[in-house]
Image (cartoon, rainbow, N blue to C red; front, side, top):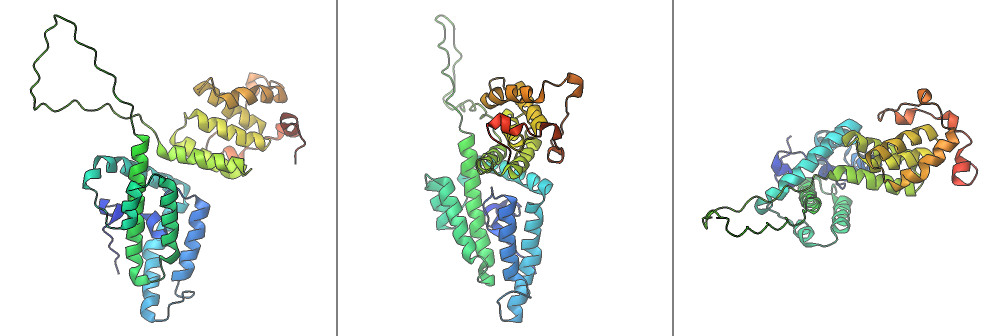
Length: 319
């Protein structure tokens, strides 16, 4: 059995795995896993509440051909990063093709007009998820609805990020300088290219900052390490991950990332505040003893030399 969906992101020869699971496009791995377990429990022939053999077969087909592949793609670090990058590119493409985008659902049309994009989008996705697989025969239609929401959300998010300032006024022609005649039907000069901005990295940073605020430092480091894989010269990422290491008393790793942050942005306030304190705590080790870091194995590297110094930096005892 094949499942053909021709609405939303599926129209662009793209399998919308977020729509299959009915999770927001910026959902983290924990949220994705939780949703997958709910859907798998509903569709699996041994645990589904369906009564007929036909329904059990359909549920198993949905699980094996749509749901399981979606979870495999979104749960792996490498595959999820690649997938999100493709989503980002599709969002930019949709801006250019916005006049030809066709929407079939009222929810998607309302998302086009709403002012509070994030709240409306996530509320709508959560509402669809509640009944997504109640009727297996209607499941593809619900997936299509979710994919239309994803399409509009990506398009509006990319449009918001690429909004460029108005071009500078053209200098007035000096008197006496002949100007070429411009035919009336000449096409206007193309607008300047919008500033390059990676939405995906910004989403990682927002999630990491939220996790740091909740004292969930290990999870924050995972988000920031993924962000640095995409944009290794992002000073904000280095500064935030340094704080996460610092809060865990891994002073050498914190120093490394604060150093990187200051190299990229000498005015980084957080790095300027904390790096001198870390240097003093570490006793200004000789340059030949400096620790080197790797973005990919930063979590695995412990910092035993910083033991006992955490309390001194933050004014309290280490818990």
